[in-house]
Amino acid sequence: MSRRVSRRRLLASGALALVGGLAGCNGTGGAGSPESATDAATETAATTGTATDTATPEQAGCRITNATGDVDPIPVSVDGSVDDDAERTVAVRWNARAQPSMAAADSEYVQYTATRGQAYVVFRLELSNATDREIRVAPYDLFGVRLTAGDLTWFEEVTLFGLDAVFEPGFDLPPDESRSAVLPFEVPRGLDAVTLIRYADRDERVEETFTATCDRSLAIGVDPVSE
Image (cartoon, rainbow, N blue to C red):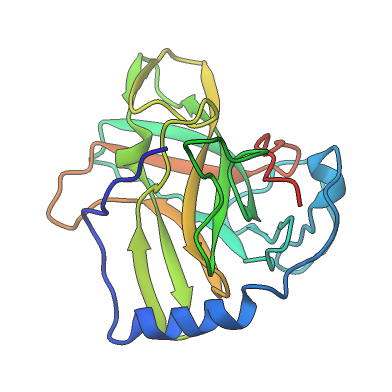
């Protein structure tokens, strides 16, 4: 397992202290439901205005609240956007879940369990080429998350690499083809919201952009450590 330091982060004054307090309040009182053999049986799913699962993809604005293990659900959404100046557009189908770890068991040398007071929000993404030519996709440069706790908002990059289930740093994607993998973000427990976003500084030229559709039928496919 490897982590990299975020190169773009905006922390409001007092954010760490407040979120740490939230994590302390929510670190042990999680969903508490036992693990099941399938994602569908272990997840609590909800969207804005409804609490029923559906296999039909939903457009932008969908909110999913899935969790397993001892993690309290965190509302998750995706803010896809289109930039006319971008060179490449990626179509994204997604599902997400909060969970305590990123592997069925820790190894002798690597711990995949989130640190105390933290959890992983795991996005299962299916990326499709939305252009008429082959494009280069760099998921770690394209995606980040916006975290919200009360009036505080800040941003993070992917924090865990080196797993077979995660995207490779960059790959070529021909027209009408897609690739599916996960992006994990280690975040404080007790957040009000996590939003997957196009992760670019204001002064950077946007080369990639994406549109998003949520799809609850996408299996997360990464089982947490067994209790």
